[in-house]
Image 1: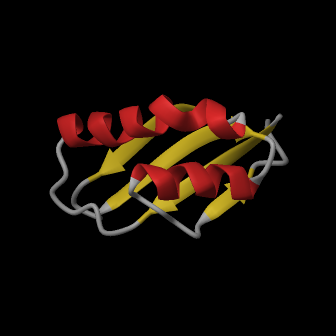
Image 2: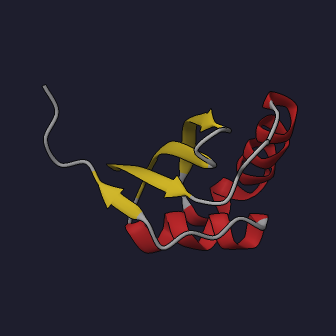
Length: 82
């Protein structure tokens, strides 16, 4: 499985609890696309959320996020790791 990092915009003022709720929505349906969301990070001042996932494709990651209510076109395959 490949690794992906995605970026969500517009999450200004979001709390840790709200991030957890959004992440839990992904976790509840991730198996439908054979995706696993490992972690999520939040920068509420910049309004950014970053998610690390493994899965079969960028499109699978995007479909789960869309179904969970927080779509993003910014999904990047992480092909080099040191």
